[in-house]
Length: 135
Ligand code: T46
Image (cartoon, rainbow, N blue to C red; front, side, top):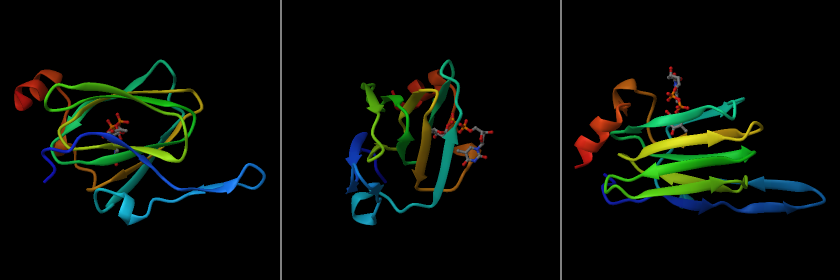
């Protein structure tokens, strides 16, 4: 699988102009996995922190199509990094077995590309369990 992968920012093409507007495209050469699911979140209040879990096998790319999303990732090696998604032509790749805490600006809309279908059994929702599994 992707044991040694680390989170990173993907820069998608930005096609267009200030006069006409822009299109960004996620074509497969830029993606580290085959997309099996797309979901999106919106209207998240600013005082709510989402995520707060890891996944055994799920890999994702998060894109803030509007607003700003701040994602704190902790890798299996315990390295914590904060990523700010504040442009609609960038995405954050999150490998499997990474803890994520996510905050949203009030106007944020988030699109997520995922490598597998929804499976509640893939979630690790307890931080102590995450630490034990990655020790
Ligand atoms: C992540 C962030 C960015 C479904 O029924 N289907 C789905 O595909 C998803 C993603 C969720 N759900 C249900 C399951 C829960 O009852 O929606 C509810 C909230 O889901 P979750 O706790 O996953 O929500 P978030 O926003 O905290 O996390 C999700 C992803 O799970 C997570 O991997 O990185 O979005």
